[in-house]
Amino acid sequence: MIELYLLILAGLVVYCIVVFNRLIGARNSCTNARAGIDVNLTRRHQLIPNLVAVVRGYAAHEQETLTAVTRARSQAISVLGSSQSARAEAGLAEALALLNVRLEAYPELKAQRPFINLMKNLTEAEEQISASRRAFNAHVMQMNNLVQQFPTLIIASLFGFKVQEPFSAGAGAQHAPIVNLPG
Amino acid sequence: MNTSNRHNSKPVALPDMKATFQALEKQRHQAIKAFWVTLVKSLLLLPLCFLPGMLFIPIGDATLWQTVTEHSTSLFDLSTEMETNFAMALFMVGSVWFFGSLYLLIRFFNRRGREPGRVYLRDYKTKVFSQICADHFANLTYKPNSGIPWRVLDDSNLFPWISDWYQSEDLFEGRVEHTDITFAEAHAKRERTRVTGEGMETYLDSYFRGIIFIADFHKHFHSTTRITPAGEKLKRVRKQESVILEDPEFQSFFVTTSTDQSDVRYILSTSMMRRILCVHKRFPKLRILFQDEKMLMLLPAHRDRFEPSLYKRADCETQINSFIADVETLLPVVDELNLNLRIWSKS
Image (cartoon, rainbow over all chains, first blue to last red; front, side):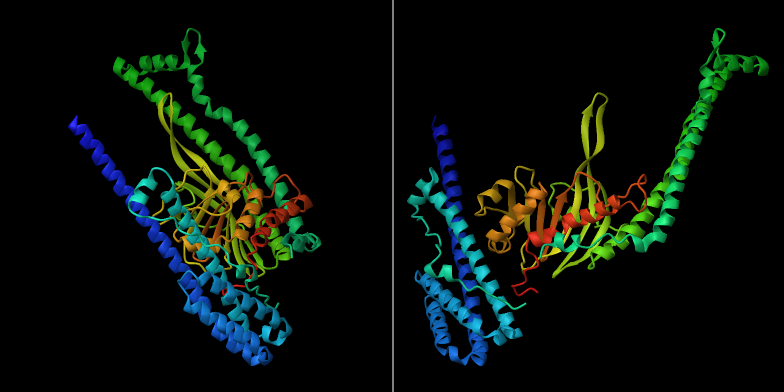
């Protein structure tokens, strides 16, 4: 009889270890995916000074819009990785969208090769940000399923695993820059 | 611009090829004549194969075989053992005669009767289809005798097995606007075993027949991503994990595996998933591989495409239109997937 109890106990311990490792794996995946978003955001941040420099040469009258973009970028960089990052990034996306609208009045600039290349890179960065956010949400869903479903929730609550917050599109997401490239 | 409309507007260029059609028509008649003449000759020669069977025709109360053996035994004064050997030798000569002559007859029929037809079809593809392709699809080259190597299919891991028999022909190479494409017809089979009344039997089972379509993808990516029909056996590939995507309809039709959870979502944007579903309506059970910045699609088909007929006139417009239609069915895939949109850094 004691052997049976020991066998059940050993089974439970093994199960706990497996679930614990799965939870750790899921949490690490979330952290990794979150870092992936930051990498892509940094890439977008790095492109903006070049964009501002190219635009300034052709559209000197847009100084105010360019300043707004630069300020939004600085704010986004300062809060990168924190909980305010989403709001700051939404602000930056909004500023870029406004800049894009204003640049409609400068067809000469839009035909320039450096500007086209920058905008292509910016579009790529935007899509990669979107992809990494989707990947992050997928990992969060996996983690939350483990934390909230029975019987894994017992182990999760025992070791203090918490429900993760998925990434929701901020107000600026609706104003993401739309690239209109010539020809 | 829609690809099919772009190509439909051009009429079939038949008048420029009058001399080619005349020569091919002559060749076609000769091929048909050769087939029927050889068939008649073969049928007339067929009884010769069965000549050894005459040994078993009963003459009186014994067969010819028994009679010949008895007569030979008495004529040459052979012992009983020698008599048995003589009978065996007679049987073996008869068998060799039957199988040998049957083999020679089939070979004769294939060489004289069917080969001219094959040569005609090959010439037709090289001379007519290549010309029609050059005329209608300016950026496309047609190579009827080339195909996509078997390694491409086997290395794709889109099927859980590798091919034991593979054939590919009708290779098209070229460009649709900004996108480089290559496609060819392919047929792959694998060896399987089944239990029959007499034990195990090995046979070749066809698992893919259709078009292998390779297109340059419009975005940079570094991962390997596979899209296979849901509910079908999937090959396990190292480092590739299952991906759960946001589109429930896409998820219901396909299983996606990738080496990078973020990169796969960059490739399969929500609009790309909808576009793949559109292609899926025209080519059910399609399989896709994204690798080395290229997109490989396996588009199943139930019939041989780009095939002329020996029994249709060389200048038959239906046949030529059917070839054009076959190509036009495939080219819109590039537009359907929006591969010509080059707003990313890859251009």
